[in-house]
Every structure is written in structure tokens, then in C-alpha cells.
Image (cartoon, rainbow, N blue to C red; front, side, top):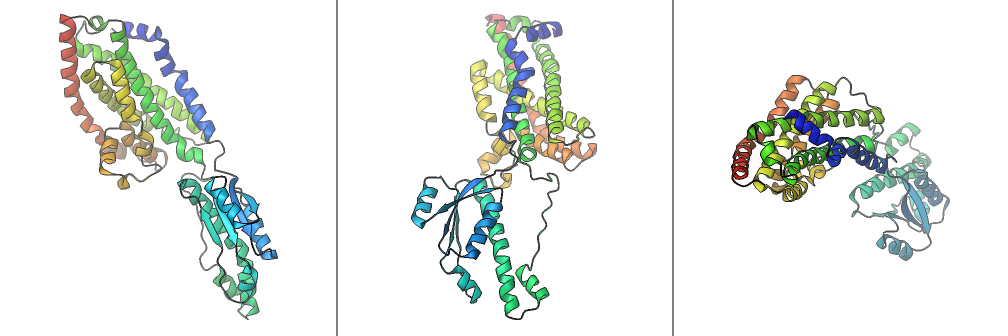
Length: 377
């Protein structure tokens, strides 16, 4: 049976592609999207109604940010129109008489607007614009306080009462690839394992070989497929993870054994879910469609970009049927927090409910064997 399965694998170009180059091509394409590390040169409109040395200094501070590509507009209406057309992601309006108001102790209002429809871009620009404006206005505030007789040391404290130091713990350059690619790889790997499993079942239907597959017993036939494809899937996931972290410059050689164990449990859980779906539907096209729809939102359900506890109840239930939701927590704990084997085993216990699918699989494969005995598929 093992020889038969390996021969079928060798003669199936689609299955070979799933196990070799297709995931690599997909991963390279996805990684290429985030090669710029951080969004840069996002268009921002500035309307300078003050036309003073200070307003030009503020414009210089904004332009100095690598995130901002400053575009000057002569009037407010044109800048608003550019934002409405999504030609600009943000707009800064420096009011007339700003410098005079600052020097006379008044509080001019600098109008800053950003397009919050693009959540990530909006938050990034909001932060960068505030930092740039604060840096530009700091010197003016310092000069104003010194002219009123405030001691220099006190004036500097008044200008910057709180100093911030941001130190990312596990992503020192706040690189988008380090932030997103591991989760994207998990979502991609889950789909590849699912397709490997379903394609191996579909091949039996496609070639009318169900009777030959189950000739030595239905459970033995399933067992052989699991022993062939689950280890291959785990090796594939491990190789992709190793290659990804090597590219990102992160050494995971010490964590690789625990990652292999976590990936083995995820592959088994995926195999159980997909096999149960196939045994219920007994149709390869419908099984692929169902599993693809079920696993499609895997990435947002991982909680990497959105906290899972704020998701609706249905979404939280949905993510529980995805093995990737369990694995990503184990993956991050292994790579970032360097947990030990005991802690990982505790986390792996979350897969236990998937074992109930064995009942569905047992009933399904028994019925498939009985049906095939009466009427070959």
C-alpha cells in the first residue's frame, strides 16, 4: 500500500507541485510585496496660509520623514478635493498668523486630517505628522519661554515633559516582513496541507480506484495516506519556516525541534478536519470548495493584526475550527518567548477536541467502503 501511494504521488504532477515548488513560488511572491519593510512616501497635502519661516520649517520637518511625500497646495479646497479623490492620504493646514500667535502666547490650531478608511496608513501618518510638527514647534516654544525669563533647564523640561523610548522586543526594526510573513506562511501552509490531503482522496475517485485503495481495509487505507502525506507536509512546513527565518536574519535553529512538534500537531488536526469533510461530502469538488471557504479567513483570525477577543462571537467560534489559530500562538511563543517543551505540550492540548472528528471519519469511511463494495465508484 505504501508503494502504491508513493507511486501514485510520483505520477501526479499536481500533487508533486503542491509538495515542492508551488508553496515556494507563492511565498516568494507574498514576501516580495512587503520588501519595502515600511510604507514610504505616502502623499500628504500641506496648505501653508502663514508663509513664515516657521511654517517653512514645519514643512521641512514633515518632508524629512521617510513616510511622508509632501505635496504643496495653494488653497484649502484643492487639498480637500485631493483627499476626497484619495490622491492624498492626509492634509496639514498651517493657519494664517501662526507664528505671531505663538510668539504672543496664543494657541493657534494646526488642522491635521487623515483618511482613517485606510486604518494602518491613517495611524502611521497620524503618528509621523504629530512627531514632525512637535519637533518643529519645540524650538519656538523653547525660545518663547526663555524670552519670558524661564531658566533653560526648566524650559527644556516644559517643552518635553515626557520622553519616550520605543524598543520592539522581537522585531527590532519594526519590519513588516518580520511582522506579517510568519503568519502569512502559516495561513498558506494550512491551505497547502488541506489541498495535499484532498487531492490524495480525490485521486482515488478520479481514477475509480476506491476499491483498490480500501482493499486491505478502510482504516488501513486512511492510515497509509496519513503516514505518507502528514510527514511530507511537516517537512515542507519546516523547510519553508527555516528558509523564511534565514531570509529574515532570525536564527531559529534552537527552536526548530519544538516547531517541528507543533507543526506535526497542526498537520494532524488539518488532516482530521479535511478527512471528516471529505467523508461527509464524498465529492472532491465540493470538499475543496467547503474547505477553501472555511480556511480562507485564516490570516485575520490569527489575531496578529486584530485582537481576537474583540471579534464577534461567530468569528471566535469559526477560528476555533482552524488549526492555524492554535498553531500561530504556539509558533510565536516558541520563536519569540522561547518556551520549553512542557509549556508547548500544555498548549498542544488545545487540539484535543479535534479527536472527536475520528467518529465522523470512522462512520464515513465505513459507509464509503460498504457503498464501494456494492457499486464501484
